[in-house]
Length: 298
Image (cartoon, rainbow, N blue to C red; front, top):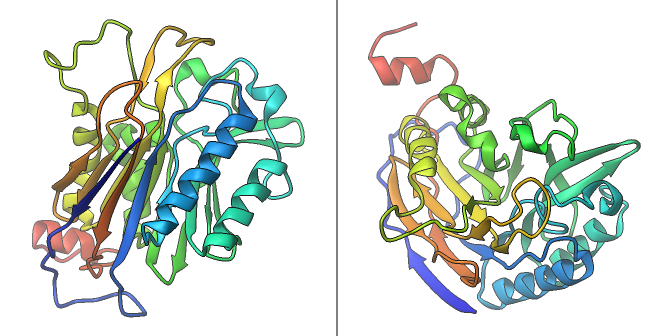
């Protein structure tokens, strides 16, 4: 497995700072892990290994892919989903976070009574659940596997204010979800993802990533926020996308729209990527954003 490190340049910011506490630099790890559809035991064990590797590399937070436990739209999703926070999968992530003293963000398949959600969680260094997000903008083909989420949120942490979304949440019309997180004060938006291409996709002729540039760059520019998408790798063997391939290409954009990294491409391109993050203090709040964008008082 490749291990790649990137250093972000310092981003200039406005003198206006709406953060309540000083912003500290930190190291973020992107766990572009292999996910084997339907093999929950194997996937969770691999996630634990990558959390340990990220901590050993002195990362403060590690982000894992969408539906890391079962695989996105796997036909066994409704059978294998587990509760949050009492289920085995979440509890194992919580123990790993506490053992290694690292923040963990991961996509999970959540059972909540009769409902099953495409969910994502954020845990602190002690394994405490800080944030639970249930995907809002699910692709049509995913509707029979997952129920509808109904809210967005941020968590105020020692690393800054963290917003959470999942994959296609990022390309709603006018980037409504990620922009909502910007209005809520997010310093950084994390997005567990499962980016897939058709089996015959030619990455030389058509390099992967334009969808996410169009989704992430405008928000990073307008809200001076970091945007992080982490995808798994591996073939999709069942469900509506059977035959497609998850190909990584995990992606980080800094405030102002500066592209920091794009992970390696391919079904075998498992990698632990790290980025040094230096947050930009919020340059505006509320109607101040419109004043900043247009120069007109609202």
